[in-house]
Image 1 (spheres, one colour):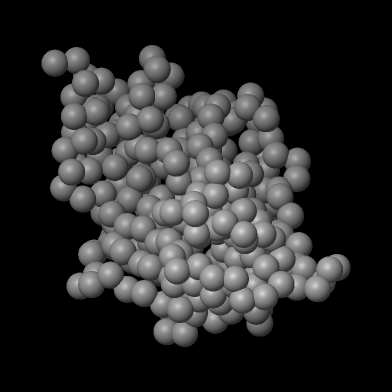
Image 2 (image 1 turned 135 degrees about the horizontal axis):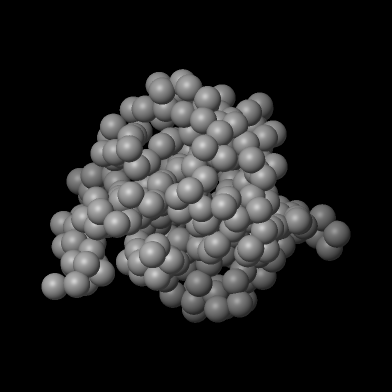
Length: 288
């Protein structure tokens, strides 16, 4: 059997056993949610809501939510006030029972968070940055030169299973692919960057790494001062909005980037649509 086929088979078998980082809850959880609609994707698959406190689950913030039935958004537009039910499973979250409860007066509707500016194009050198890793030691991005480096952005207290926990599960699956193919394992490294440095201390990052089974020879959890992480992440398309006292309520998109051995941007993987098998195929084509 060819090495590439073996790696993909390992990934598929691993995922069939469960790629999700968090354990399945005893039951599906549901929470009432209210807020203001900021944006709706053209296919009505997601809606951005500036929501109020979800009691017993999360503070007020602005987030994108999945929509299973696009018809639920018929007659709903940005600026509308809605009530809905937030449904949480082990691996997913979505809104249902959406109902319009009012609208902001003209000129008073909230604006969606700004999109990142000055995103690096593929082929450009990624700026160097000094992180602090899960052991508390400084770790420069440039120290990864000579390897393909897959970088994603997370924070350990992210509440929704299809955001940071999904990225952790995807990276765990990619790690298994690297371990199954020595050629890739020698030439690829993984970095999970926390944009919540005040909470995500090295001790908490180390605990998350142990929980997920991160191999320190392949995968590091790192962070840096907030302004530096935001600037670095913005170059790769990361958007972070902080609300509440001290900016503790974090709204973010999902962005994963592959750097080549020279530290240049080789690929980007947007949102949560990508899968580990896609990354492994890309790496197999790149690593000679």
